[in-house]
Length: 195
Image (tube, helix red, strand yellow):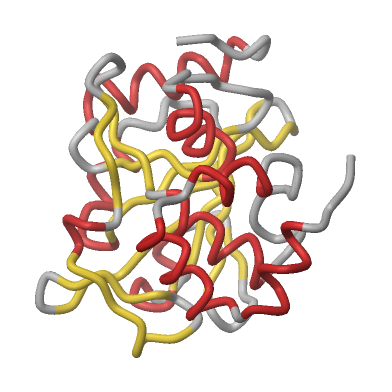
């Protein structure tokens, strides 16, 4: 693993892997690098996904001194889980010393099917939403799903920096799924970004 320069983030990630490795799935840039190069890189911030029913277990392993902020579908935020409607939680932001270091996105599963947050009619078998990295022993969300969020909500989820490389590396099946969900225009736009 290539660790972050932020030691607080390294402590958090290592602790979550040690205690909740089966519950968490890496997302965003970390997932893209695992897919593209099989490199497990923890940058200045990392993104993780967790199934709603596993969220409380993950929360138990966030060390004391880390601030957790909860966000819901309705735009509400709170520093206390009990102030939020659990079924409406969308994500959490974890801060240490007033610096945001981790986002944890909550996903829902119904009848063993993952439901896309922006359209619950889009579903996949839960076991098909992630890959497992054998060398690193961690799970990560498949790139087409990461891109679904990034392309439909730019700025809210990740960056466009490596999207073209990821799209180029997708299988035909992954590409078609992404195209059906995000639309041809957004996909074309992502492919024509110049750096």
